[in-house]
Image 1 (cartoon, helix red, strand yellow):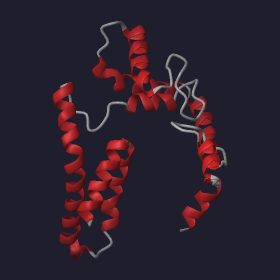
Image 2 (cartoon, helix red, strand yellow):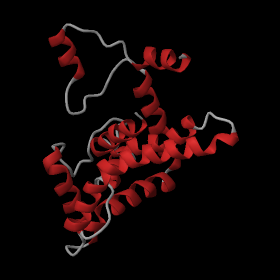
Image 3 (cartoon, rainbow, N blue to C red):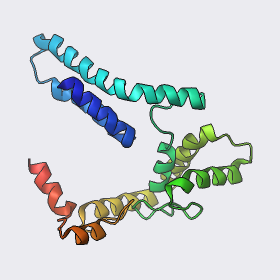
Amino acid sequence: SIFAAGCLLGYSVLLRPNVILFALLIPFILWRRPPDRAAPFLKKSALFLSGILLVVLPVSLRNYRVGEQFVLTTSSMGINFFIGNNQDSNGANAPPRFARSSPDDLRRDFLREARRREGESFPESRLSSYWFKAGMDFITDKPAGWLRLCLLKADLFINRYVAAGNFDIYFSNAKMNSYFPGFGLLLPLGLSG
């Protein structure tokens, strides 16, 4: 069951790469035993990690073969980081002015903008690191603006409004005749256990 949980987390990582952070928490959850029980802990951790690797490693090897560089799952982290951390960010998932919101166009638009800024010879393999650095530059150059943005993100997280991503949750709720209470209610309930 630990191995299967690792496989499921591996599939989750392929769909949402930031889920890999949970892989760091699992060994701490498994370590609920006295120190003299290190062997079962190590075995369970190895099984869990093996499940993740079984699913993620083939994708990583394919990425290396195709792109000639090691990319664990996707190379969009820098773009996503910049979308959430730039002077024009609205705190939700709105792309900057130079990019369209379509997933098919987003990467091309970010590459075109990087080449406009850096020259036509800018390699696509540096796209993620370039935009990650651009987001970090915003944070370090304008810390007050970034703090305001963080407060806006926190407000968006806890209030009842859910910003639309790939689909409109309010349209879905109306079609299914359902009600979403909002994270402002769900967060304290979740934290209380």
